[in-house]
Length: 73
Image 1 (cartoon, rainbow, N blue to C red):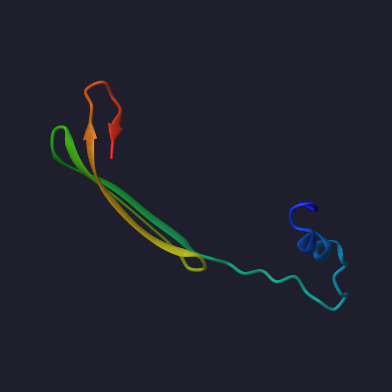
Image 2 (cartoon, helix red, strand yellow):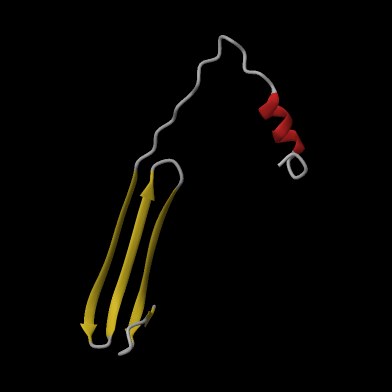
């Protein structure tokens, strides 16, 4: 890390002032995943995630299930 990011490494090695308190920031993460069958071998796949401090993702796809077990979305 020192070779790739020397500025950040130097800051990390500096001692923190005595009056400074650690700062903790929480986040909420929720996710929902689902798979709805249309008719064999097809189904609709749905995936969503929400993180209050980082991102929101909404994905979907059409899935084909092979007889041997694997599937492709």
